[in-house]
Length: 302
Ligand SMILES: NC(=O)C1=CN([C@@H]2O[C@H](COP(=O)(O)OP(=O)(O)OC[C@H]3O[C@@H](n4cnc5c(N)ncnc54)[C@H](O)[C@@H]3O)[C@@H](O)[C@H]2O)C=CC1
Ligand SMILES: O=C(O)C(=O)Cc1ccc(O)cc1
Image 1 (cartoon, rainbow, N blue to C red):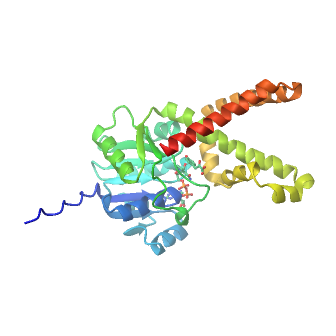
Image 2: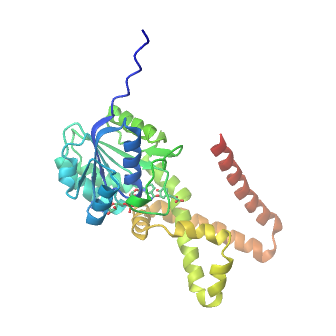
Image 3: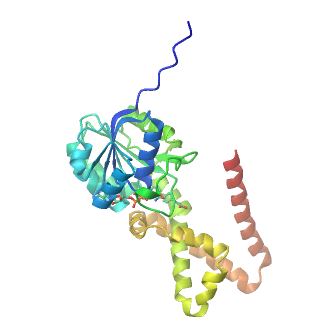
């Protein structure tokens, strides 16, 4: 007699609720649907009736609710995937309706202000595990998500000092099943790192597009006709959602302003080198950029 085939792993959760099934939330739902070992039941909830309708049409969840309290009532895990500015409000609203022993998580792009705002509303019988999947696109909404979004990307976890280690391990397993690698980091460190690698680049992209637009009379057709390379790369991230990025900038104010000030000093130094024809300085700065790009590509291939 042959050995029976190994049993499929138990689903991580009986019921998983995703609040805000936009780009990130719908990608989580799609992967959970495809994977089959994440939750026996998927619940989606959004304030926007059009989003609820679309999530039903796309069949992304077993149950779609407009009322967040109904959505979380049976959930073993609730993931808040709403804009950063709404996470604390939605968290405070759903916490009293959650099951004892359930896990509350969220995917916001900033961490310190969210943790500071949710901590006072926390219950002793609910573990709170903040996360930040370092993956996304410039698109929003339930149609923009896809099941492979998190493959080989980092998901950063910033648990509180007293967060139940078992809940942290469960959320790490969730993200591994989403295809991601995980790392636990300090929330303040997270906000500084993201200010330089994500928030400042977006700020620069929005600004450069604004500057080009201000020059529209002078450059009208050229911007569109000749924007073949560098400028086009900036326009991709500049197409990102304004509400999402307003919230990120305002919620990571301190770290972002510090990185912007450093950037402006460095840009001034480059301007000075160009003015005085300091060839060595200009070449050194460009070499550093090439070096960073090369290591990024090497790491991706590894
Ligand atoms: N877009 C990206 O590339 C990434 C975004 N994030 C974070 O993920 C979160 C979600 O971002 P996206 O998926 O891009 O946004 P999205 O705009 O695609 O989806 C957000 C959804 O939340 C819903 N929503 C807003 N307020 C709500 C409320 N009070 N109750 C219920 N639903 C509500 C909206 O109707 C929308 O459907 C944000 O906090 C963002 O900072 C994290 C990593 C990458
Ligand atoms: O589209 C891009 O280039 C991104 O950088 C997506 C992104 C946006 C916000 C995040 O917090 C993480 C990733």
